[in-house]
Image (tube, rainbow, N blue to C red; front, side, top):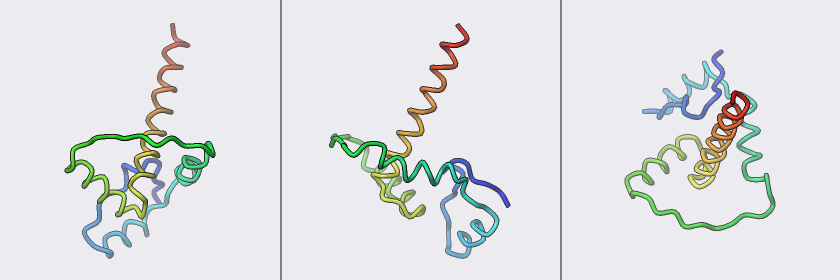
Length: 98
């Protein structure tokens, strides 16, 4: 059984059969599931922002989110949270090696 450690590893499926076959051979790493839950509950306070983006990009994001059974806004927040963690880790590694 393969373990999915990043949402990018989950493909877009052409059919329910393809999706069933994929999930029959793959499982999601618990860290991803925990991050999905924790991303929305890190703080009880949230701030509303306005973000302008290309309509085609938004359409693609919504399609990806639907294929993963997620709300597109939640998925964007998750992606941003993951990227911030990556950048912070990279920044810390750079600081330590100096």
